Image (cartoon, rainbow, N blue to C red; front, side):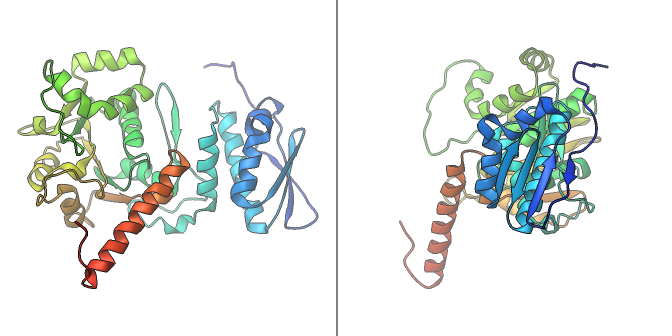
Length: 354
């Protein structure tokens, strides 16, 4: 057991303050306080901007002033991030953003039936050899917990919400723990509005452009040499959806990405590959369908048909769950608003845009 970073388990001490809008937090371990507050107190500045509080650091203490609820949210954020640092985790600005989102969110809105009641700020997380990934939004939290409890999980929602990244992280953790013998990553080989034409090389080189996002996430979670060994041995398989026909996937964790580009027949074929001691994760965004006109998306059909089926969990993401650049969330919202406006216009007899 490594002893290179033995930290006291004690939580931060809440120093009594004069009124409910004024709290002082004191942190016992001076070695990680700098990381908690951020360079030039940038993490505290983020708290101020997002929660509308005033956060002033002095030594190992921070004074928080503002509305009672906002002060409580700021306190929860700092306590949680401090505990994460005590466990040896690194802290990035995106982690602070995620902690703030979870503090603000009403956990009661998580009505996923596979979840048991949990205390506020009890983040779901998954660990691999390279990193520990912690949920940054309520939907991400529900998504990670659903993967533990259901054999088939659908992650539905816009780009940038972490669906693929979290699913690959969870799958990699099962492989590393020995809870799954194989990892199968799949994606329909459908072009996103372009025509790529002839692609040179062998079969793997031809399909790699379509599967590159899965490789990227995999290398984030596992050492490159282990990924290469897994690909060579067949423990890790990355294949287009067409290669799934006729197979039974046992003792495996199976991920289908960009599932909105499956036809109804392909989706049924894929879902019925599920074998004993296996789990499936299906991700997609129904607003980005690249199928030919007139083709029904298998993802949309499956999400309707399988809602409420025992052993199946549906987790829906929205623009509020986008964890990429903040502008991505605003872009998604703008497109959603435009789509809703067109639907309303068509419903009132207005001509459909060409």
